[in-house]
Length: 484
Ligand SMILES: Cc1cc2nc3c(=O)[nH]c(=O)nc-3n(C[C@H](O)[C@H](O)[C@H](O)COP(=O)(O)OP(=O)(O)OC[C@H]3O[C@@H](n4cnc5c(N)ncnc54)[C@H](O)[C@@H]3O)c2cc1C
Image (cartoon, rainbow, N blue to C red):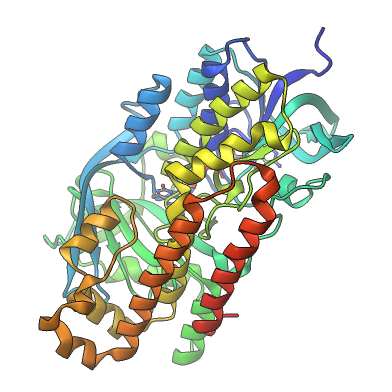
């Protein structure tokens, strides 16, 4: 006899929720009953907001390989729309370009969730579409289910042994978590970026690989056009593009004050598109596969993941767990890794009959050890870079970024800026001593933070002490950068 409606309810059927649900079903030896609840209708799964499946659509081949190896799920066309050989990052003055080699894909985010729903259904996952979740049911210090409303305004209430919160960056469930937990509920406004993008078809005005290149995902750093963030031009074909940018509000406010402007997201994106020398006559994609997804904006968390991602009967994953990488806001890769690890942990916890915080704790440890341990140091680097003017970014990319650093970043590791100690570059260091000191500071801090994260506590008992030390390190950084 089961005492709950389901073993697991996954709240939110987006990138993270759909992979978590499929993974639980894949790893469960006891055929766990899994229900995914999403506010979208069945013919529009994975839609983030009323404006569509807003994303830059880029993911590394490594992440999809990891998914295939762990779960047997292999994506192909049409959900993979285009292939690239790497990411090319341009300095604000375009004089320096840095290639981060490594195959990647540009997805069709509208079509992918349809495929993901099929994958989950094949593994026995059930779906409830058209329900907007509002709160969690709590009993005896455990999360025991979800409450929401259908499109006809009827109350929807279901119980489960575990609720996975995959409702994305605006998660209300996490904010309103009704039990005592170590999970952080609120995010600092400075740790969110506002982002927006178009999917355009266009005529090619001229060849200029610094503006559009079908072989590479281009990133343009520019504190004027994308203050505290970056702008991107990701190819979706020879004359089709996902083009957009993200900014930090604090940095945009400072930029607007400095230039006497009142620009918002739309102004910035339109200016970025207009400055592109390759794109002439841009028009919203005419493909039926992009219908309802041609233009939109949303937000991405860019801090380290939540310091703790589990509570009694509850776990959080994807954007709801603040998983996107702080340095590039890429959230698909971490969502894939997090969802597979969570899927395995939940399946094991159900089998062990322990869905308490301690029973689910392994998810925290495994995610931190395999993926998350670099993220606090990237949070520090991001906060520092956000304070720099374009001239310093130009200078830093030209003189202080070494081949070794590029290799490290390609493997999602923190750069060492070893050029700062290169005697041949001492003159450059003397030219920009503040920048050199700042970068060196982020390197030293990163070493401490990475070591600290690799020591993530094996059990909940040591968590408070671990977190206190982490927050002390971070607080020092924010004071140093004048951000506290
Ligand atoms: C403009 C932009 C560009 C980006 N570019 C990239 C990129 O190029 N590469 C990359 O790796 N990442 C990128 N990201 C980040 C990436 O899109 C996200 O990290 C990823 O989609 C997170 O997946 P998720 O499942 O956690 O959340 P989401 O994709 O937001 O899915 C959440 C799901 O939960 C459902 N939901 C939400 N609230 C409720 C509720 N109350 N009740 C029921 N259902 C609910 C939604 O309907 C949705 O289906 C970008 C993000 C943006 C905004």
